Amino acid sequence: MNHTELKGGVCAPKGFRSAAISCGIKLKAPERLDLALIYSDFPTVGAAVYTENKVKAAPVQLSSRHLKECEPRAIIANSGNANACTGAIGMEHAEAMAQATADALDLQKSEVQVCSTGIIGLTMPIDRIVPRIGELKEALKAEDEDAARAIMTSDTRPKACAIEYTDEDGKKIRIGAIAKGAGMINPNMATMLCFITTDADIEKHALVAATNYAVNHSFNCISVDGDMSTNDTVIVMTNGQAGNETITCESTSRTAFRDALKHVMLNLAKKMVSDGERVTKLVEVRVSGATTKDDAEKAARAVSNSKLVKCSWNGNDPNWGRIIHAVGYSGANIDPDQIDIFFDDLPACKNGLTSPTPIEELAAAVEKREFLIQINLNQGEETFTMYSADLSPEYVVFNREEYSLTRKRLEK
Image 1 (cartoon, rainbow, N blue to C red):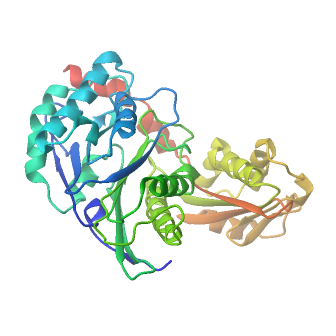
Image 2: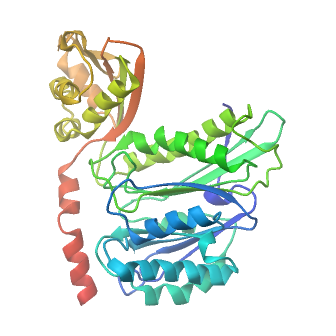
Image 3: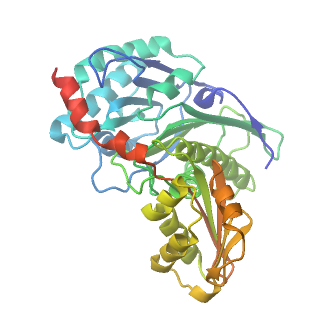
């Protein structure tokens, strides 16, 4: 599909504005943007995917309930505190954020989606947040850079994407997004927030189907460290201002929209893996020749999540033995004597045995910032692709004392 890359993230589509401020959520002294608001000037249709973790943060529980009651018009999101595992007071705080946002924008509370990201188990400093939400309304503008920064936690850079494509009737449709995510990243989904806006005119069922498809082919295909968060959320809002003919589940135009949405999500998914906590490699793991799609996915996920495999990538070691052993325990239907493994296009393993490719050439492939691992099971026609990262000593150092250090700073 042809599309044009745009600037503006969530504010690229018509009728959307955003803002961000510093509240000092993680530390009492405001040091960084940590509260963001995204708002549509027009009524919207919404869809969302939330974490499958059975331990769900209060904002996830509230937002899920709100989406069942009403279409979203605004998203209020903070970084620095996950408001997860905080009991009844956590839900009260999520409710307070939603109500204050609704009051500022003259909305119903259920029209507000609430998202939080940060440290688990700490009470939200709600007194620093609610009194400031009115400032967000006054600061709304058609620019997204501040909002993209305000939702960052361990991210090293903001993540945004926006595109425009022309539909079959000549109407220009825009999709924009911002996201955060760097650690605790594992399929279904990642420790991530992603907020997507579009001006497409699309009915509810078609939007939900497109959103689920795009998530399954992007955020559910990435892995950094094998952990699943309590706060993962993807929210899509569309306000219909593009003026296109309404996209339905029966429309031929639904495929173009679905593919455009997938493009935006996959762009951000790859940025998350590339910005994983102290990672040095972005690795595409492509499994082919599987009997079923499920077999291909099992093999790709096993390799992408293997700590041994990730460590070898970090050491620039083309250890295909670790890859084939992960395929072996994945649960996929395989014949070990027919498996081929390539680093980029260099054969490392043919028919389950080492290939004659010089080790220096294989090592050079793994040494690159980005490379491809191809695994052909030679059993069928199905494929599956994952995007993964290496595991570095710096990752361990970075994650050793986050909770205790934050507690000590707050208690000073």
